[in-house]
Image 1 (cartoon, rainbow, N blue to C red):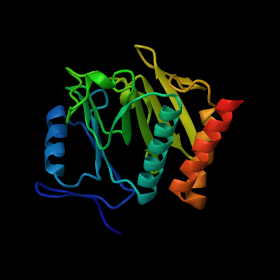
Image 2 (cartoon, rainbow, N blue to C red):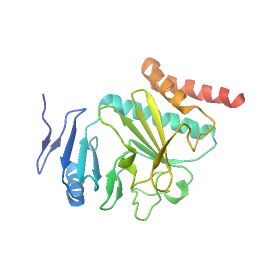
Image 3 (cartoon, helix red, strand yellow):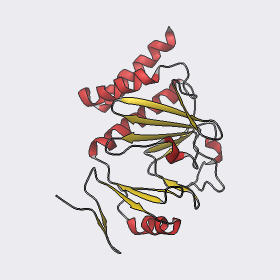
Image 4 (cartoon, rainbow, N blue to C red):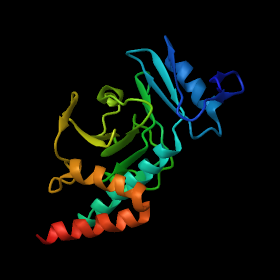
Length: 218
């Protein structure tokens, strides 16, 4: 058994581990982000309301699901004739309030406003249009994104897709996506994530694209 380690020089967690540091400040969070350095696989969150820093080390399954789900979103965007820009990994911060690192975030309507940017600064840049989280060993709550407030939040957990819309004050769960209202994504997404494990990601993606074309012709 490998125990989590945090020193001045080391931040080390075994895959699947999550470490919660309580009664921490924004300065503590920024210090940990700097000390992480090349440990880009670690995800670090901060919430000023709870004064907690959460450090997570995703499992390999997490990365595969995140990559395939992002590809499915891109396929949906292509079918809808929409352009986009996507970021991963990315740290989204609302200074002294919240910091989070989604598995993927997309700019769709507002893509023109962030073209060419290497970093997103929410004090001056627009919020993402869509953020994606894969939950395997940890649980994402809509409140985790309250201050960051992407227009739409997807959480994929236990073979279910949860969709949340931000209403300018808080997140409300929805059965449909604002970006893809004509598709039953709560059925389609779990189906093709599962197919990705059965037959491989690229084949599942082709099947998904074929399914979208068929649905558009009906």
